[in-house]
Length: 54
Image (tube, rainbow, N blue to C red):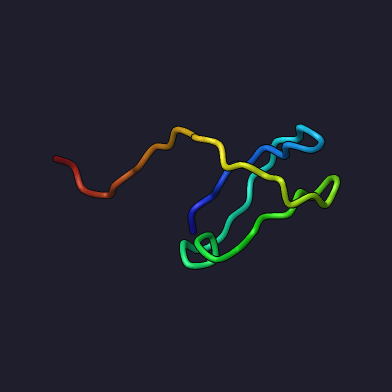
């Protein structure tokens, strides 16, 4: 399941949430610290590990 990073515009806290892509598309994110819905998604790098060698 993907992990999404957010930053609350109200209290400036950054936080991460794990959710399915379908939930991410329809859900308005709520800040766990202040409860505000003014959270903006942050860009984040990621890595992928596969089991096959190329």
